[in-house]
Length: 140
Image 1 (spheres, rainbow, N blue to C red):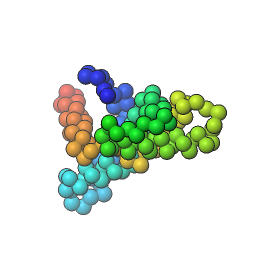
Image 2 (cartoon, helix red, strand yellow; image 1 turned 30 degrees about the vertical axis):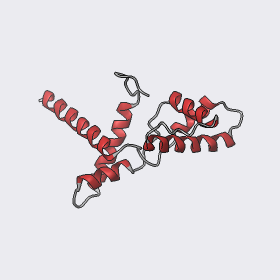
Image 3 (tube, rainbow, N blue to C red; image 1 turned 45 degrees about the vertical axis):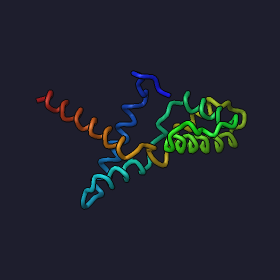
Image 4 (cartoon, rainbow, N blue to C red; image 1 turned 60 degrees about the vertical axis):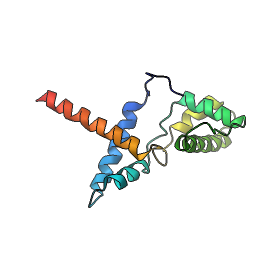
């Protein structure tokens, strides 16, 4: 669980990746329906899993000990199970590596989707667009 005031260390990279997916989705739409657009964005592939290596290693350790991750939200649980699958594949290839090293490589693999709700993606993209507009205003 995140603590109040904590910052996501990959926020900038995740936002850039999400905004690129947004731009691609808009360019491929003939008619834009906001709800469908954000569903398409969050289900588009991402360049990596947007979780820190340390957190992934902790959750992978819990899964290896038998934890079912029932206290997590469904999308987060789905993401960690996908990270765990990537971890297991890497573990077969490199059995001599430890959990932290394999977690590092697992989260840096391309992710099948963003593991965000469409509402969260909308909030993030609106914030990005607002920052971009404010930056342009200051420039002129």
